[in-house]
Length: 236
Image 1: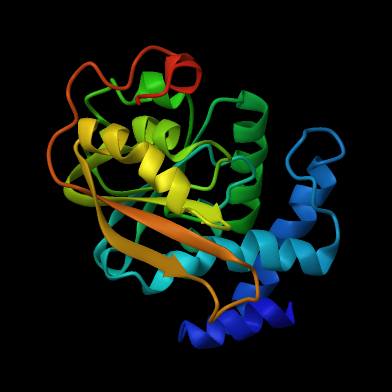
Image 2: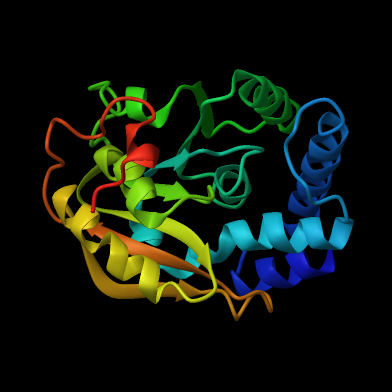
């Protein structure tokens, strides 16, 4: 876990030995459950450490993340990025959402075994949960590491964010074309792109980044559209 240890040092996070032990247990449980439930295609330990753990933490230096108290992770899968962030920032509250109940049950067991107190899991589609007034525009920040076009992710995530909050989409490679294609969707959903992109070069060598979208106004009530539509007919 040397890469993770170096990342934690750069993040000025103390008590690293205990934290590293929790990350190792987390990794081992994911890989064990992966034999029964599809959680990750990454099985090499070093690659897992870099692409799941360190990669999840790249938002730590963004000014809005430092101030955020309540964060929702949409399409969390095996808990990325929400659970690694929760382990490192116990003072923040995290809600992890996934549409597959099998994954949520695995996460519940992992969270219980790790004795994590600042995480709640929810089994739901984002399109449905975003209509729930207990969750709609109730979060300081939404994060998504799920693989989908930015315009689709924006429709899934921006409805959860308070006006004045942020949505962060984890991306790799050249994001300029995708960002240009998504500008109408972002604007329609109450978001604004302010040329704010987090690079993770200080933590790893991966060509990964986060596109940050500011929530400048309320999302119109008709969004997100009913389940399946955001991905089938993105806002263009």
